[in-house]
Image: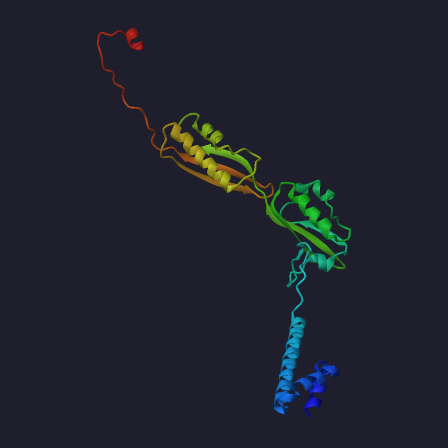
Length: 268
C-alpha cells in the first residue's frame, strides 16, 4: 500500500529502480523499522519539496502584470467623467472647430492660421502638442492647456489657460514738490507694454519709497489702484502718494574770529 501511494504521488523518487535496490541492500541490515523510517523521511522530504515548488509557481502566476505607463499627451475632455486623454478617444477624428477662450483669435493673429493642428484635419497628438508650444511662444499666456469635446462625428478643440497681463498706463499723484511725481514714476521702472506681475509692483513701491527718502520724506504713504482691461490684457496702475513731513537741515551757526573777512573765511 505504501509503495502504491509513493508511486502515485512521488514518481520522481522511485523511477530509478537500481537506486532503490542498492538503498534497500544497504539499509537491510538495520531491520525493517529502520528501512521504513528512512523511506518515510524520503517521502516527507519529497512532499515538502514538491509543495514548495508548487507554491513558488503559484505565487509567480498570481503576481499582477506591471501597469503600462500612459504616454499620451494631456488632451483632456471637458465633459467626460473619466478625464480620459482625448488622443485615445478621438485620435484621427476630424477637428471641426478650434476655440480660444481667454485670448481672442484676433489678438493671436496670425498664429491661428499657422498652427500645426488646423480645423478640417484629423486630430493628431503631435500636432496638438506643437500647437500648444506655438501659442505659448506668443507671450500672451502665463499657462495654456487644451480640451476636447465631441462635435458630431468629429471633435472641437478648446485652448484656454491663464492670459498674461501687461502694464498699461502708470500714473503718480499727490507727492510734494513740482517734479516729485515725475521722479517717482521714473523710479518705479514700470514701462508700458512690459509684463505685469505683483513681484514687479512690489519692487516699484520700494524704489519709490527710496526716492522719497532721498528727498527727505522718510514716512510716506503709497497706495495704488489697478484697472485691468481684459480684452487688451492691460493693467493701468495709479499711485496715490502722501509724502508726509519732510526732514530739513536746521539753522547753521558759525563761530570764530569776528574780524575774519569773508574772503579768508572761504579759504579757511
